[in-house]
Image (cartoon, one colour):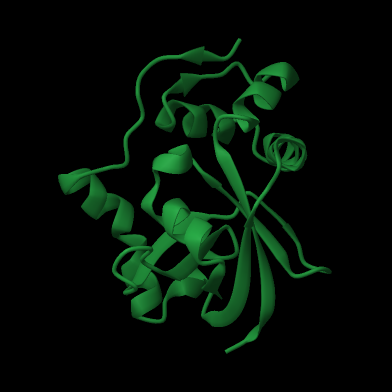
Length: 162
């Protein structure tokens, strides 16, 4: 059963510094150590117009179509999500290779399909993702369907190497 256990909020202070630590792997050309499970996302601030960076988890991918999928665990509260909702043109670094990409927020049905694939591939991880988002989840299919309507799933289509 999907159950709300708290109000999620993006990390601040020391917790934010810990969340941002993987950025240094990419800055020092060590992104390959994180494999293909994480990407370095470069995007523009919706208000400032300045280049912003974050590292996010890849929850699914379609290599033949050049598509990657990530979840905004804080839903629409996440700064990177707010920014890519305004400007869909981004850069994505996988391992140490950077690509131009286009971001698109998936519909609820598309998000459900992606999240169900993620749960099959990483059955234990969904509980941690849900907890981070302020929910407790048993991992049953109906819970995942409900949860996919709460968090936001973003598709990144790789447009070519930079």
